[in-house]
Length: 248
Image (cartoon, rainbow, N blue to C red):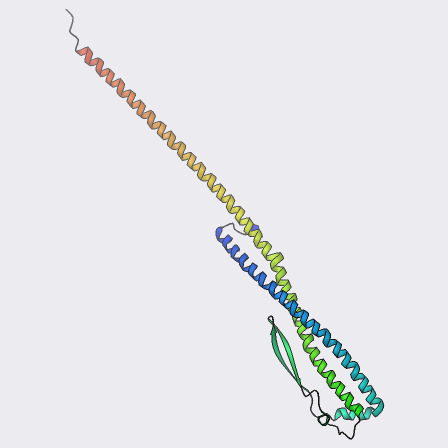
C-alpha cells in the first residue's frame, strides 16, 4: 500500500493527521471496551443470581401446583386459573449503558391478593392459594430474567463490535499509516539528499566556470599588456633612429 502513496509533503501531513485521529479514536474505543466489559461483568453477576432465583422459583411453583392437583384435583386448579380477571401488564422502556440501549421492563398486577385472583375464597383451599402465589413469584422472576438476559446479550454484541474496531485500528489501519509515513519520510529524505547533491554540483560547475572566465580574462589582460609593451619598444627604437646625425 505504501508504494501507492505519492511521496509528497502534502500527503505526509494528511497521513500524520489521520494517524493522530486514529490514535485518539483507538484510545477512546479502548476505554469504551474496558467500560463495557466492567458493566457486562456486573450484569453477568446479576444474571447468575437471577438464573438461580428463577430456577428455585420454578421448582417451588412446580411443587405447589403438583400438591394442589393432588389435594384438590385438576378441575379445581384449572377453575381457579380460569377465574383470573386482571392479567399482568408489561411495559418496556430503555436505558443507556455506555452507549448501549438496553430494555428496562416494568410489570404491574403480577402479585395479587386473595380477592384479586377472581376465585371465591370459600371455594378453594390454601393449596391453590400457595400455588397461585408461587407462580406469581415465578412470573416476576421470568420478567426480571428477560430484562437482564436481553441487556447482557446486547452488551456482549457491543463489546464484540468494539473489540473488532479496536483490533482493526491497532493491527491494520495504524500499521499501514505508520508504514506510509515511514515510506514518505524516507523518499523525502532521498529527494532532499539528491537535491542537495544537485545544488552542490551546480555550485561547483558555476565556480569552475567563473574560475575559467577569470583565468581567461587575466590571460587576455596579460596578452594586452604584452602587446602594449611591444608597441612602446618599437616606437622608442624609431624615435632613437630618427634623432641620430647623418655621416660625411
